[in-house]
Amino acid sequence: MFKALVVEKDDEGKTSASVKDIGLDDLPEGEVTVAVEYSTVNYKDGLCIGPGGGLVRSYPHVPGIDFAGTVEESSDDRYKAGDKVVLTGWRVGEAHWGGYAQKARVKADWLVPLPDGLDTRQAMAVGTAGFTAMLAVMALEDHGLSPDKGEVLVTGAAGGVGSVATAILANLGYEVAGVTGRPETESYLKDLGAARIVPREEINETVKRPLETETWAGCVDAVGGSMLARVLGQLKYGASVSAVGLAGGAGLPATVVPFLLRGVNLLGIDSVMQPYDNRVRAWKRIASDLPMDKLEAMVQPATLADLPQLGADILKGQVKGRVVVDVN
Ligand code: NDP
Picture (tube, rainbow, N blue to C red):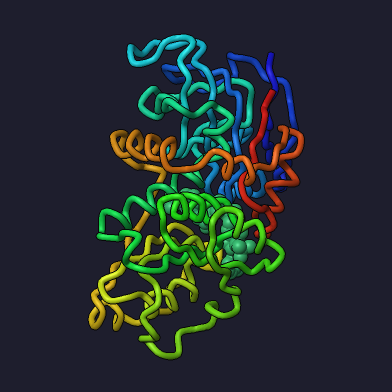
C-alpha cells in the first residue's frame, strides 16, 4: 500500500480530497510504473483537487498534472528500473491518474528522461509551469527575439509561469519588466532578475486605443484577457507575444490593428500535447538556462496533506512562485 491524494465525489456531486492508502492494483494500466518523488501545484491542479472544472473524467481520482521520480518497472524498452524520469501534460492528473501519489502508472510515450544537471526535486520546482515558460521563451526566440531588441514583458510575473520566465529571460541577458498585482513581491521579482515592476492596474484596463507606444520587444503572457489585448497594442514593430495562460480571463477584447499595422505575432503555447523532441529540447534548455539558485528561491515545500489548501490558494492567485510537493 502507498499514499495518494484521492478526490471523491458524493451523491450530490460534491467533491472532497483526502490522503488515503491505495494499492498497486488500484493504479490504471500503463507500461511504466514510477516511484514518484516530487510533484507540484498548477492552476489546473487547483481545479482537479476541487470541483474538477470539467477536466476530470471519473471518480475516485488522483490529481497531479506533473511528477518526477524513478522507474520501478517497465514493459517498454525505452525505460528500465532505476531510470529518472519527468512527466508533464498528456492530460495526466485530469483524464488519467496523476502525480499526487507515491506511485504512478503511465504510458512510456508520456515520459521524458530527466536531463543531465537536474534532480527530481529541481524538475518539479520547474514543473509544467516552468516547462511552459521555457516553451514560451523558445517560441519568442524562434520568432526573432534577442536581448538587443529591447525590454521583454512577463505578465503574472509572481506566479509559477511568470517567475520561471523572468529568471530564464534575465539569465539569458534580457531586460525584463514584470507585471504583478502583488506589490509585496517586488523584491522577489527583482531577485529573480526583473529590472522593473509594472503594476497590474497600469496594463489591465480595456483597450481604448488599438495602438499605444511601441514598448515591448516580446512578452510571455500568463494572464490573457484585457491584459493580453493591451500588450498586443504595445508591442514593437514585428514583435511577438507568447500566449500561455488565462489567469485574468479567457476573452481577448482586442482589435486586429496591431497585426495589420505593426506586424506583431500572437504565438499560442501548449505544453500538454507538445511533441517529444521539443519536450527534450525544452528540458535541456531548462537545465542550461535556468539558474538553480534562482529556482531554489521560488520554492515553497509542501506535502500531500497540504494539497487541498494549496489547490484553493492557486485558484485565488495566492501562490507565489513554485510549490514542490514531496509525496513521500
Ligand atoms: P499561478 O496562479 O501561479 O500564476 C498566475 C499569475 O497571474 C498570478 O500569480 C498573478 O500574478 C496573475 N493573475 C492572477 N489573477 C489575475 C487577474 N485576475 N488579472 C491579472 N493577473 C492575474 O499560475 P501558473 O503560473 O501556474 O499558470 C499561469 C496560467 O498559465 C494559468 O492560466 C494556467 O492555466 C496557464 N498554463 C498554461 C499552460 C499551457 O500549456 N498553455 C501550462 C501551464 C499553465 P501576480 O500576482 O504577479 O499579479
